[in-house]
Structure formats: structure tokens, C-alpha cells
Length: 423
Ligand SMILES: Cc1cc2nc3c(=O)[nH]c(=O)nc-3n(C[C@H](O)[C@H](O)[C@H](O)COP(=O)(O)OP(=O)(O)OC[C@H]3O[C@@H](n4cnc5c(N)ncnc54)[C@H](O)[C@@H]3O)c2cc1C
Image 1 (tube, rainbow, N blue to C red):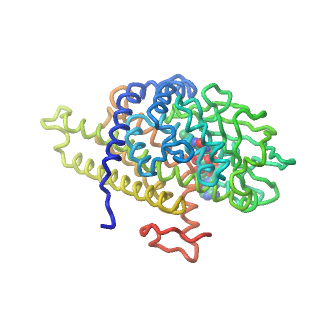
Image 2: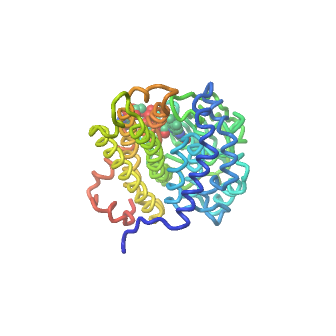
Image 3: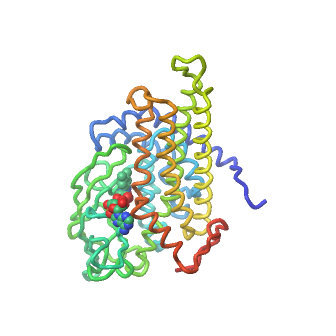
């Protein structure tokens, strides 16, 4: 049998553990995180839950076993992410962002870098350590890969003897505050090594310890959703790190390192989209079964409501299996199967926004009210899915366009799940 979507006993146990954790730990604080006074307070409202996530072993789930982690498969991560994000997106996204920050090391680090940089996270059973992927320049993010040196990442890394010296301003550096606004444990900073060269020749990713001199948490943004995900502006001013901290080879592999990290999150964000859609569907289903709204039958008996619920459910199922396939192929090809991962990000994120809106249409006006239904919160949380992690317009569709227009593009490669040919 070539295809089998049946989960193993271990995967079912993991799903149940994640669901219990979500209901028991995240459920009671989800509203508090969403309603806190500002972005910083929202983040802190999830602090204890993050600690419990570390105790439960989730925070080392993506670290390879040989470096002290648990080494979940991508599919395992997706199963857990769906259950967690069904209840709250903020705390699991904090975890996902740490995973994103460590991806360059996990995917492209040398054995020495992996052991040195990953081990502290594997040993951190208190959830004190956060990693941050410092990709987005304050001036923009979508054109990070500009081949023209006039555009592209402006954060510069200058070689000085055995060191790199980094200067630039980043924002939306999730987790970049640490828990005390003094900085996180580790940043992986996307920078360029030559202001006169385009991304293909100059892009680099450098691991920067949060204790390095010259790092300032300049601002903590508040957002309309994902409020407990802390997205600060972080300034790097002449930050000096040893040359041994460069991941991959500056210029030669910088673009791949960036793409690899973003493909990992792309596949997993599909699971977060499914989790939030599921929450909205379950609410709308329950509402339509129990509410008559001055009619004589529950509203689910009206054909328009029943048809909409069926359409909503179909989209959720389709997104779930697309996510599973993308995660499975990404894992099997050691991250080289990126097309399906990117498609998952685009398709599921846009499906989430329209599907949750459809759930609001099923419920009607109560869905637009803060205290009567959770749908307005779910909608605010979901609206970022198409915008962040490389926006669908400025980054993701361009990635797909680049793939599809290559002369040797194989339309069946993603379906087969083969390893793509090297560029
Ligand atoms: C909750 C959250 C968490 C985040 N976490 C992180 C993180 O951990 N690390 C990090 O670095 N960033 C993070 N971000 C930022 C995020 O990943 C951004 O999506 C990304 O940097 C690109 O932003 P953008 O697409 O809006 O690009 P911008 O450069 O600001 O472009 C703005 C818009 O211009 C248009 N545009 C620009 N150039 C083009 C083009 N060439 N072709 C077509 N359209 C174009 C598009 O419509 C695009 O949406 C986070 C954001 C949020 C909200």
C-alpha cells in the first residue's frame, strides 16, 4: 500500500496529549492573553503556559535527538500544532518562532554549531530560553532576495579579522525580547556581507548570542491578533560575533538557508490554519445545532446553513491532508521538497480567513461581538496567516512563480514527492 494516512498509536497518543494540554493549560488563559493591555502584557500572560510546555517536552520537540532533543517528525509537529492552535495561537507560535530561529542551525549548521547552539535549548526544561529569527528589516522584508544591490536586506555584516560585525534594524523579530526585554538567548540574523553585491552573492545568516554587546530591544509592537506573540523591533549596532557563527557559506548558500527555514514554517503554518478553522467550525456547528433564533427549528435545518457547514468542513479536511503531505515530503527530502510547503502556506492561510468568515456568517451577528462568541478573536488571529512568514503576495507567490517558470519545471514533482534536482 503506497499511501496510508492512518496515524500510528504513538501519533494518536501525541494528538491526545496535545489536546489535553491545550484544553487544560491554554484554554483557561487564551482570553487573558488576547485581552491584555498591550503586546508585552499579552506575551507575559502566556509565560507560565510556556514553562509548562517545556516541562511537557514540547519545547525540544524539533531539536534532533543527537543534540538532546526529542526529534519529532514534521508530521508529529503538525499533529500537535493543530491541537494546540485550536485553543490558542500565541503560546504555540512562540514555540514555533523559536523553532524558526533554530532552523538555520538545524538544517545547515556544522556538527560543532549544532551541538554548541542547540544543546542549551534541549537542556532547558524550564522554558527560559527563546530563539529568534531576525529576518525582516525595518525597511522591508519581501525583497530580501533582490539580485540588484540597490534593494535587498540592508542589515550589514562586515568582516573584521576573525569576527563579523553586524549593524542593522530588524522588526517583528518574534521572541527577540526574551522574557525580560533584555534580548533572547539566540538570534539568527539575516544580513548581507557586501553592500555592492546582490542577495545571490552576499546574503548570510549569522548566529548571534543575545548577550553580545550592541543589541537593543527598541520597541514592542501590539497587534490586532496573535497578541501574545511578541514581535519587537531589535537594533543591532556594531554587534561582534566570531566567524565560527556563520551558518552555511555567506553568499554561496545564504538564500538556501533563508528559504529552508521559511519552508519549515510554511508547512507547519498549514496546521495552525487547520487548528483555527476547526475551532471556528466547532463553534458554528454547535451554535447551529442548538440555536433556533426565534424560528421553530435549529438553524442547521436551513439548507443554506447546512450547505455552508459542509463546504467549511470540506476545506478544513483538504487543508489538513495538504499539510500532512507537505510535512511528510519536507521531512523525507531533508527540506528540499519546498513547493508543496509553500503551497500549503498560501492555500491554507487564505482558506482559513475565508472559512472563518463563513463560520461568522453561519452564526450571524453574535459572531461580531466580543463577549458573545469567540469568532472575532479567531478571525483576528487568522488574518495574519496570509500576511506573515513571508507574505503570500510579496514572498510566497513569487517563490512559486520562480519555481514554475524554470524551464525544467516538473508539474508532477510535488505529487510524487521526489527530491528536487539541485539548483
Ligand atoms: C505574528 C508575526 C510574527 C512574525 N515573525 C517574524 C519573525 O520571527 N522574524 C521575522 O523576521 N519576521 C517576522 N514577521 C514578519 C513577516 O514574516 C513578514 O511577512 C515578512 O517579513 C514580509 O513582510 P511583507 O510581505 O509585508 O513585506 P514588505 O517588504 O513590508 O512588503 C509589503 C507589501 O508590499 C508588496 N510587495 C513588496 N515587494 C513586492 C514584490 N517584489 N512583489 C510583489 N509584491 C511586493 C506586498 O503586497 C507586500 O505584502 C512576523 C510578523 C508577524 C505579524
